[in-house]
Amino acid sequence: MTDRGTLLDVRNLSLSIGGRPILKDISFAMRPGEVMGLVGESGSGKSMTALSIMQLLPHSAVTSGTIQFDGTDILTRSEDEMCALRGDDIGMVFQEPMTALNPVKTIGEQVAEGIRWHTGCPRAEALERTRAILDRVGLPESRFPLSRYPHELSGGQRQRVVI
Image 1 (cartoon, rainbow, N blue to C red):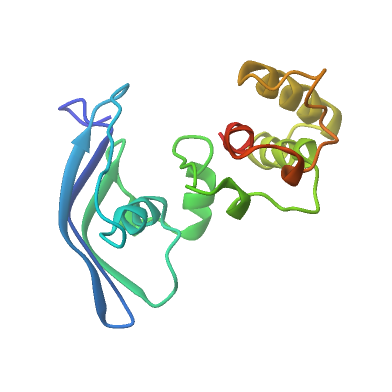
Image 2: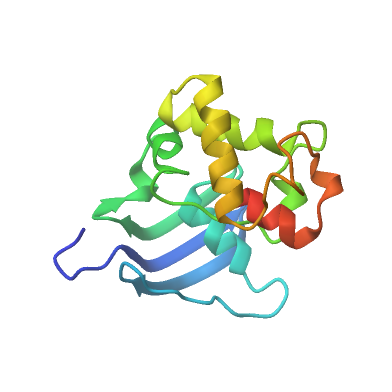
């Protein structure tokens, strides 16, 4: 963490895609435990700001400025480094969770896959951890077995799976 106790520090973030300006000089900072709402009209750049932080931009994207996360500039990290960071240290919940869930895989498979990817644990352990996580977010086994598919859940329930 930086000396100031700032966990996420976005400074003068600008983004263009295919030569078209998308973001211009976005700046904000967050300390650990803080919650921030990014508010704006449709098309104002809220999602692109989040995608910039996560480094989930198209290859044609050009960024400038800095995005410091825990003292490291995210904009200089390789894709392998970002893969290690995403999910373990930083994440986002997409506005429409169906864009983050595979409709032909069960919720159990998908959550367990993420756990296995980040921890390297065996499948059985990942499924146990998946069950515990879903219980913790209010999706108990009795009503939400791991065998359910995303389309069988409400939007709010799908968001909890993604979280």
